[in-house]
Image (cartoon, rainbow, N blue to C red; front, side, top):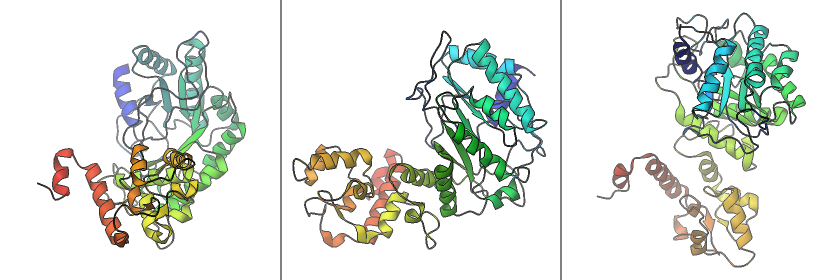
Length: 405
């Protein structure tokens, strides 16, 4: 098999892993090629948040495990390939020199056993660092079940490590990935957290959950994420919509991936990390799943309409963050500006504050954006849903949505 044929197979096999991101590293160039700065690389992200600037490959798609949802499970009849360490180095360096990539994301199926797989990954990255003097960004996937010694050795070579929890619940893992053990996954997370330093995984760690393969609610998924952030100081939890590529009685009968659900989880995750929300504020037992027609912040506001409208000139920073359409930058602008003058509606526009959603939930100097008699859930929800539809619709079709000709 040629190197090109291997690359086609093993880059395609890696596309289902979403947990790669290149930021937070300070690895410097020491008479070699490439570098990874603290502000991250010049990378692009696809619409669903996936990083697309790294060479993203599997070392092999051969695997001794038989996870129900995985294309590369051992019971699947797919074309298999294995890169040698030297081959991965050749591709990485050639792609880097051609300016195709700025770093490497390396994962692998499990061949022979976890320790053997990790040893081959370490051999590969050691070659890149020592023989080819590649100082660029490298994100590697740690293999659950590998020894602590090997995890520590790999962590000293790479900028970021990740180990996938795979499924949001332990029951889901036992049912759909019976070869994997939750404690082996979390033990690596704990080790990375405790060993994290300027030279050991300087960009920290991430993980990924597959969404929709099991029966977990959105509330259960976010609860797991909240726990992972708190316990292991993860940089990010990635959510990957279940792709129905395998037939199995234990898998849901979906025709398309639940991408809208994935989007809502990413939006809610952002609220957890940057907006001071707790899971129980976003979802509860009566509302365990998101309204896919609205973003989670707007959905929260509609379910807690008694907290609104908020007066722009009096609300605290964290109260402003609860207003749909107002983020940290806008909230800081508002608080800074009102030291000098009373903010009116025209001032918000001059300040560049987006009012598309915010206008339904705020007052400016006691005034609603229109008659306060229409401050009700039905009116606001209808207009917010329409705004979402317009945002997702090609421009040529937007006029008809508004009822215009």
